[in-house]
Every structure is written in structure tokens, then in C-alpha cells.
Length: 271
Image (cartoon, rainbow, N blue to C red):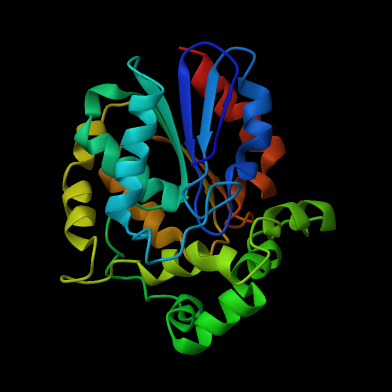
């Protein structure tokens, strides 16, 4: 499991989602590292981390939370930390956080979830396609999920070719795309799905953070984590400071970097 560990001071733990990697947080690390210790892991199968096949690693939510716990123990992170989460990082990070609420100083939430699919939200057809045999061929054979995200996850401006190449670089072969597929296949939608009980348990404990200082940065053009999800966060964390960017997409930290990074930096370093 690869991770960045840069800067010094109170720890800030940043968790990425699928199909990105720690590269997603590069500019936030640059802004925070003069005064904070920035720790940014790459989930197993993602970024520069090892990419074992599914016979050697389960690629489940439970395994991801266990990996996070191992990293925190290895780094001996005892001081309360700021947790920054995006996409799958929200489910992984908040599952761990609800088991260790005393370890959380602040939360930064970016287009993610830590609860089941809202009843009002249809499951996106694009993700449904990925969960089919054809989806396996598209994702593992053509890198469709990672490459597609570089075009669909930003709506204010187009992602530059250089940045897009960096996002897709770790996923350069059928073998190296196992995690981008397994993350989608592992989305727990109903009782009996692996991880669904953990999702429900996490959702039931989010009230532990009702008064934890929380910043929510939300891109309104995200076709997966859309306003249905934001409405759930507003209920779960009613005192959170919400910055809603109506024209920004799923990669909100890319799409609205000039607005969000200064605000997040101020939120984390002040008060």
C-alpha cells in the first residue's frame, strides 16, 4: 500500500475514490504541507500501490477499512486528525471514523457517501453497465472507467491531456485495472450484498459527528453523487459548512480548485 507522507504538524488524512488515486489531492497537499502532516494513501490496486489479482486480495469494503486501520497503526497516528474524503474514500474513511470517533478532529467531505443509496436516487445506468460482463471487457480491456472519468468528471472546463494522462497512468493493463472494476462491483445496494451491513452501521453512527467541525465541498454536476446525496449529508451533519458549486463535476477538487483549496486550507488550519 503506497502512501504520501508530507509536511509536519497535526495530521490530515486524505482518502481518494475510484478511479482516481492520491494524485487527486496533489494541490491540497501543496497548500497544507507547510503547516500540516498530509497523509494520502493509495488504496490497494490503485495508483502506485500493488495490484494483486482477486484471488490474493478480496477488494471489499471490509478489506479497505482494515487496510486503513493498519496504515494508521503503522504510522502511529494518535493525535486527532482531519479526515478528507472523496468518492469511495467517504465510505472507507467514515466506516473507520465511526469506529474511532475520538480520533476525528475535523471532516472535509467532497462528493461522496457514507450511507446506502438514497431512496430517491436511481442507480446510475453507467455503473450498472460496469457490473455486467460487457462492463468487465470495457473497464479491464479498454480502461473505459478511468479514461471516461477524465472526460465526464469535470464540467466547468476540460481536463488537460497532461492531467488526464496522470490519472490513467496507473491503469495501463488488464491486470492493473482490477481495482477500478472491483470497486464498482462491490457497491453494496441491498441486504445480503457484501459490505451492506457495514454501510448501514456506518450510516447509523454518523450522528456522532453532528457537532464535529465539517466542511462539505460539493459539485452539483456529479451524475452519481448528486443533490440526493448532499441532502442526506445535510440531514446527517446539519451543522456542516456547505460550499455548493452548481457547475462543478465529480472531480470537484480539480474542477473548482481555485475556490475550494483556499477555503479547505483555511478551514483546516484556522480555529
